[in-house]
Length: 86
Image (tube, rainbow, N blue to C red; front, side, top):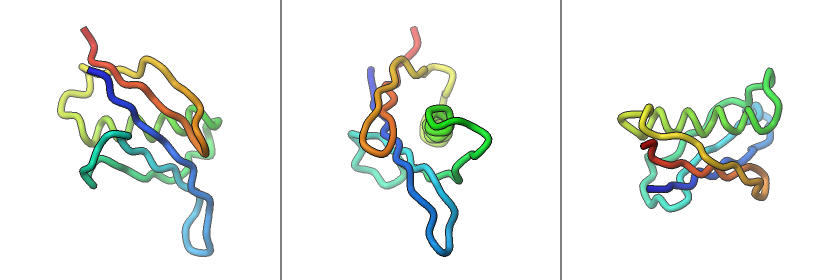
């Protein structure tokens, strides 16, 4: 079973600092997204991957049975292909 997580960079405003939003591309449920503060100690792709990992930890009950198998750049972020581990 494959799932796609899309991450998106959200720039700072007058009230909030920069953030990254991660959500499942095929999900119609509102709970299938998470927004984290931008981790400035990481480079771009690793910052986006930390958001994808946070979403996996939030939504999937058994995180150890899933892994990210591919990363593709998309507009303002990245797509992470998640696959069930054998």
